[in-house]
Length: 221
View 1 (tube, rainbow, N blue to C red):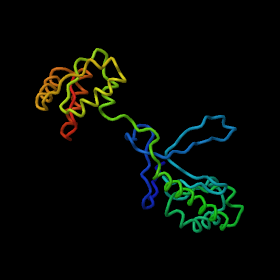
View 2 (cartoon, one colour):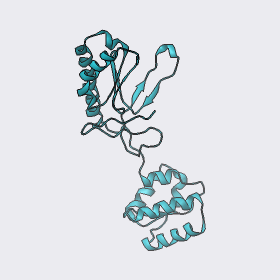
View 3 (tube, rainbow, N blue to C red):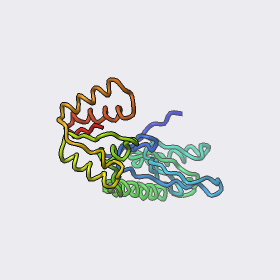
View 4 (tube, rainbow, N blue to C red):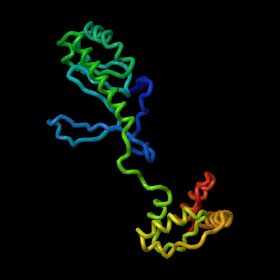
């Protein structure tokens, strides 16, 4: 079965996948999915937020209307479809069996309440800050440097000073900091390494050399 995506409201964030589609520094609101006790399953986390009520569930990533009880009275289904038309412009709706036992106004009231909750979550999530930022390129490069690292040479005095400061935390790297090289010589040495070796160190140098085009200071070891 093909699932169509519901049109997003203006300002609504694009949903992110948790299996590799999140970039560094991105804030992603997630929802804890608690299965019914009788299923005996563990909790899971999903980036696809939804709000479940007794009569309906709002599913922002799914378009259209669906029913738990497909065998319900067709006239009742048509009546609910008409009543929920304004909600369907914002997200998909799944109708549960108890919805056929109450007035349409009750179902619509729950739908409006759940939609308000979704909008409040989006508004609050847009202001969430990262609790602990990830390491920058220099710190990450030194943190993951191989054992037995040679000399660390840098094309920028400030970056070299920062590297020397970081090596106080990682004393095995402290003897590696050396004098500053010129930018051209740094890149020439990198090009030679990248051409003749495929080692992890060379791949890191390759990434750093590419970063130099963005005027990011270049390291070499």
